[in-house]
Image (cartoon, rainbow, N blue to C red; front, side):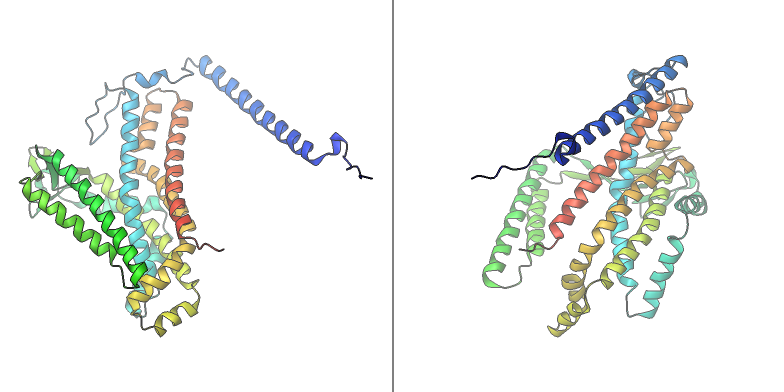
Length: 387
């Protein structure tokens, strides 16, 4: 005789209770959001402020240093310029602070007493000073001590330095630049093919692949052949001072370089400690095994220690990347026109603060999510796979 399965009453069924609790929690959150939105819109209407985002097409009303945006440009263009300036800090800063942090972290474990102590002094000083003070120091004690605009310092006609701008030699596209891009794409495909070939050959024969050097060599040779065949598709643009304006080259505000240097040095000090701790977390037996097969110190670090240390280091390093991105908002203190400064300028000019703050929060959230996504992909690829 088949035994009937006992079913508890609905009010005692765990599965039903879970669904009910989740529905009630979701309804409570929606109710709270509705009340907050209702109060916000009522207060905005009472103050005569818009409740939507139509104001983004109104004139900006402020100047943005280092850009071609005028006060008559729409607000959305000014905000977009702030996003671009923040992106310029993030794209340049994260690779720099990563390289410096890894080098200093490795140097802290050096057997050379002077190197280890110098790296330790760097870390202990910079990571214990608020980043805002470092920005003020770099800007006031270094950047503002550069020559005046009319007395700009020229370095081999390649770099112009003054207390307002730092300009360096740039590149200009010539009429035959389009075909050169096609050649570069072909060179990248050829380099990828060589990379794949050297990897397969190494797996089949056991010899060292040297795939990076092979791929780089193929890419370089094809690119140089295309460059000379097209008779220089890329030209040089040197920075030249014309009165009170800089022409040619790549020009960056001195405030940008001050913020970049300060935040890179500050964040690199934290990454150095993460790298040092991660290296110490690698079992000593791994180093002893590397010594037993006669690997040089550099080979031991490159092929044995760092790959294992990075598996431990990447998760906390992601947090430091996010901290660096959020700390770019401190650039407002020295007048660099990133997202936060432009937002507060617009709020001071009478634009609705709730919508402006909402857009600012959304901008930083977007940056953080993209960085987390990219670095987490790298983190997953570096994790050990167990069967």
